[in-house]
Image 1 (cartoon, rainbow, N blue to C red):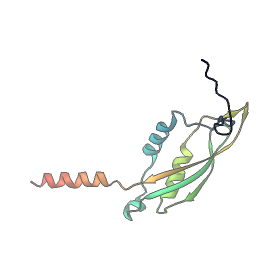
Image 2 (cartoon, rainbow, N blue to C red):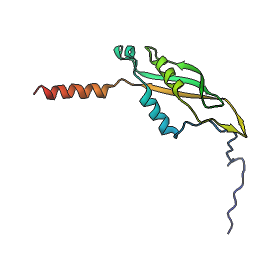
Image 3 (cartoon, rainbow, N blue to C red):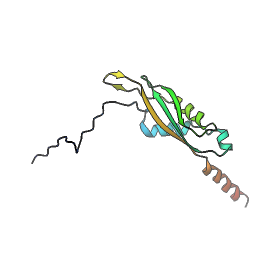
Length: 130
């Protein structure tokens, strides 16, 4: 018995022609980098602003970030903070058939008020008053 697979229109073989730059350590390292480096803007905290900031940026041929653009922001300093953190990143450069290239990337950064911390402080204050 011989099992043979062939490509037809119902089962096309996926080919990857372009290799995209990768963040050192992968997706989990990328998410940790964002969490560790984002500082919630004071103006956003005061006004209780939270939401998603959408960012488009280019990774150049040596893995550095250029041309950062906020495509959808929430203001109150969050847009500037998202841009600052994105500019801190450094990618592993991608080579496609030996040629280095620039690649446009998109991401979003979620700004969420630190409510859990506030609740814990409030609960500890209640238990302290006993």
